[in-house]
Length: 186
Ligand code: 3AM
Image (tube, rainbow, N blue to C red; front, side):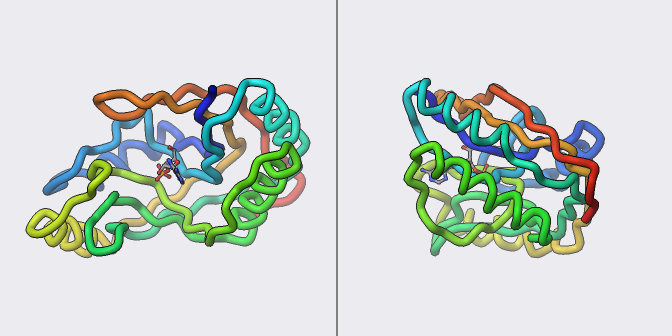
């Protein structure tokens, strides 16, 4: 079985700015530079032939290159804080790419939940239970203090990523990369 998701990789030029935003994290586990990404859709665990069908469907997507704007930090979770992230602006191009990826995965037979897309780059995770009490307060305060964070980058491709779950957090492997086109700009 292959646990996988579709994402936009964070270019090496922007990673240092994101890592700087992690500085002073009061709780949780920081996401290492090589794991930073902007998820387009989590696909779940599937047998290899199904993932191959998804790969072929993703290969058919024609979507333009786009500027991705990162703006401010957030601490996600109901009551507890599950993760700390940098928000991405949901531009028209990003929304369309998210819709195209989900449509491609559904065409390949996947049953994806119909949930609102909240684009973000996770910079810290707080385990399956999340952070509560003092830690949760500190994390929310940390995110609020970094509300002025801004960065942007040009996305020229998206990737199908395999996720391996391990004791010390997930590790990722790019299975395929799909170019975005230069025909149109955001
Ligand atoms: O790094 P972010 O937060 O963008 O949270 C997981 C991560 O997203 C999400 O998929 C990305 C790669 O692992 N994810 C993991 N398990 C999930 C699940 N069961 C999930 N999203 C929805 N449902």
